[in-house]
Length: 401
Ligand code: ADP
Ligand code: ASP
Ligand code: MG
Image 1 (tube, protein in one colour):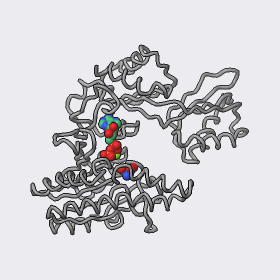
Image 2: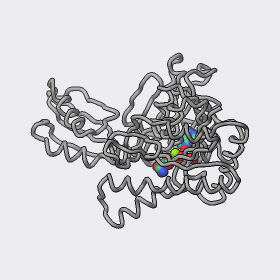
Image 3: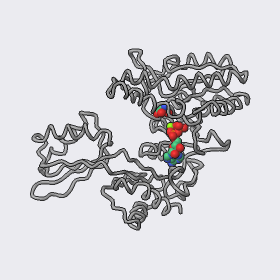
């Protein structure tokens, strides 16, 4: 079999962990498999590199920041290769540019366009273990890009898809995908399997266990994806197109996102074109708008509230203030201390009343819902940020207690 194995930062944080992970890789290789390994930077390296940059220049160019951030992964692949060499195994480390991991030009959040498999295949043909840097690629000008925080998962899936690997295993510091973050939520249960669609929602709604674009790509190319522990050797969670028992499970998981802010635009003329102008201005600035709520008409005016990522609030607010006259509103307000809590489950397609169960849990806990949004397989609510952890726990208790 051809197996791609990705190990996250905490799994390779120090020499002892690198050696232990080398043992997992060695066992896979010695079972007569071809092995391609994808690694993240060790421990908190990426955060530390960001701090180093900030000490020198709080607003560095994104290009130079990517040159810096990509170094963390290069350290990991070199050290892992040394650990495997020491075990007497044939190994070669490769960086993003060496495997021609080609991306677009969006430094800091680049999207993968293609991966050349030539070099990887040559090395596999020599029966070498190939250890590749996650998180980094190279754009059309030959410059280094990075894929966004947590992006090594996406590197691994892209490489697995290009090689038509038999499986792509994402090793991390928990035993798989749980019904909620097992480090924060009491009673969180490991899922044996989850659909691509549910996992995509959970990842986009704040469950950091997989980078959301990795799941999107796994679905598109039918990559056989598994999330499992690098500490205990047992089966993890299979992420796939169809799973058993969808209807028995009301929901698969709960996620939270605190990188959310709410903007309220008050007193907008209730006439065609005003909502369009408002959201066009934000879209032109590439600001993503999430939950939108419009009040009913009062004296020919209404209010529109919506959420954006908290780290885009300043930019969004500035754009709307600059265009006050053109947009015709009376006032705007921003609120940062909000959080989005979401439940996700394909079971919602076939059973009703699931949102009501979530709302009942919040009501019992006296947590106020500020906004609601739903799709076929998810319900999200906006609440006060201080209630975040309590909200996740009471909703979890309600569905899984
Ligand atoms: P890695 O460094 O291996 O990429 P991450 O920190 O990116 O690991 O992701 C793993 C973490 O995701 C876990 O330690 C856990 O706290 C968190 N997490 C959040 N939601 C979930 C969930 N539903 N299931 C499992 N882990 C989750
Ligand atoms: N090292 C990068 C980060 O910390 C990528 C990753 O870990 O997936 O975000
Ligand atoms: Mg991660």
